[in-house]
Amino acid sequence: MTHPTALTDREATLLAYGRDIRRAASLLKSGLSVLIHCDKAVGPHLWESMVHQANRRAVLVAGPGDPQVRAMNPRPPMPGLRLGAADDLAEDTENARVALRTFRQRYLDEIREKLALLKDDEVLVMLHLDLLASSVESTLAPEVRELVELLYGPGGMEATLRQAPNVERVLLGFVEPTLVIPQVLAKRFVVPLTLSGIGPTVSPEVGVEQPSAAALVLAQEAKLFAGYKADEMYKHLAGLHPVRLRQAMRYAYDQHQADPPSEVAKLRQTLREFKADTSGSFELPNVRFDDIGGYDDVKREMADAIRILMDPHAPRQVRRSLPRGYIFCGPPGTGKTMFAKAIANEMDATINVVSGPEVTSMYFGESERRVRELFAEARRNAPSVIVFDEIDAIAGRRSSHADGGARANNAIVAQILTEMDGFREELTMLVIGTTNQVNLIDRALLRPSRFQQVEIGLPDPDARRKIIEVCAAANEITVPPKLMPALVQAMTDWNGDEIRVVFARVTAAAYRRKAKMKAGLPVGPEAPIETLLGKIVGQMQRSRLQDQASRREG
Image (cartoon, rainbow, N blue to C red; front, side):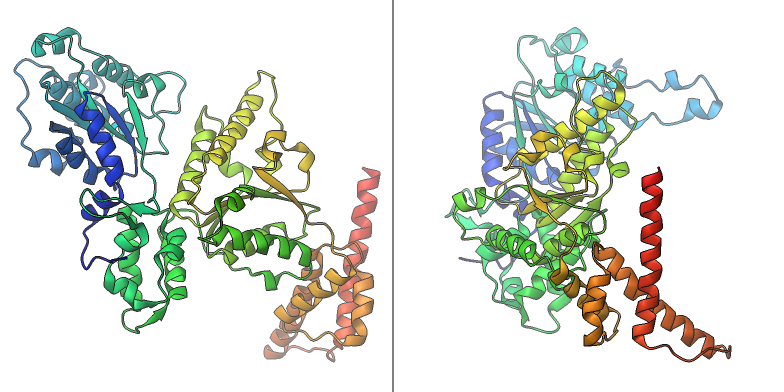
């Protein structure tokens, strides 16, 4: 296993995606158009090698003003060829008449110009096809319809100029995975290829196959972290595309080079911090299993699953026996979301807790797009955990009714199913849903291979005792041993959140007393902890009884 001594982002990309580049090149060489789904940062490093290996010449359409286009000295526009619709924008004001055309219009003009002049041995490369064609609308935008007409040629002016109407033009398009282009446009490309993260190994054109976590990590970076093993680190790097991986390793090296050698655990933590800092929604969890009192059976079950999930040497059959996610079901306040955060911490993972309103939208197709983006970002930040808080709100049973609400719910459930069934085996991801109404969730999600149900009910006496101990320690409160049995009994049928609030109120009462003393205000004698706890527990008991009476009357 050899680590390189130097590696640019471009070299890392070509190395990581060598197989995909050769596959795309063989298709282009055969005159077949290819659509590449990849991150925006990766595409500029790929197209040239793909076209070169296909023994063809590239005509790049990266967008008006792109430095890559200017560097290639594109042909001048043809005399008499219409390049845009600036005059069409000149109806309202003088400023509109002199304004630049929109990006879509200018991009479409550039495609039209270069497509008209494309030769048989050339490939039209469109780096930002999604910016022109992506849409969540049910009808095609005018620019998209015009683009479809252009790309499905030959015909009209382009065929006349080419004088070869029977030769299909070869296209290489790039699309951001979270953006969807219309099917009619996607089908113009014979083969779609998806490039996401990195594979377990890289296969250079010349040389032997190597582990990715060795070939894409510099020797000085691996040496800095004692205990670095490529097979064990792969799960922490698999979701990063090559450019982001190199950025993450440079960041980790800069953070720790002043105090070498560092343990590999510090590298894992730094990578988590990097992913959280560069992510729009994923963050670092701050809850551990030790912060949760009781529920030892749930902790054991989840710890066993995590060990298998994170073990790089676990047999494939054993890994496949695990579900893709878990549904934590039980009454409110029992710590379901806390368990999800603790699981993410045990995995050295990032986490994103999502509520229903963050996913749902009134606009057609927008909810599905948000789900796609959520899972795409989870893949980029793997190991990662997605938590759908109150999942029944967005994943209720699908309906055959024709109303808009039913269609929107059906689409969200279908998109979640699609994303979960498309999990890459080498990426460590978990989806966790929390609910107190599991009977409302669509049955397709509750298949054993998708979501496994885990019951987190009200704590039993032993669990209540442990929750009391955890909450007391967190608030630096000492509970007298003789008081513990009475507290456990008084809190029968309480959930963990109610128990936590008792000790939070004790701490708040102590703070208020100190604040009054500091301000010179009169205060009475300090009450013993037994008295203070008894008073607060009694207040909460009365509130619980009143709430229960109100629900019965309602």
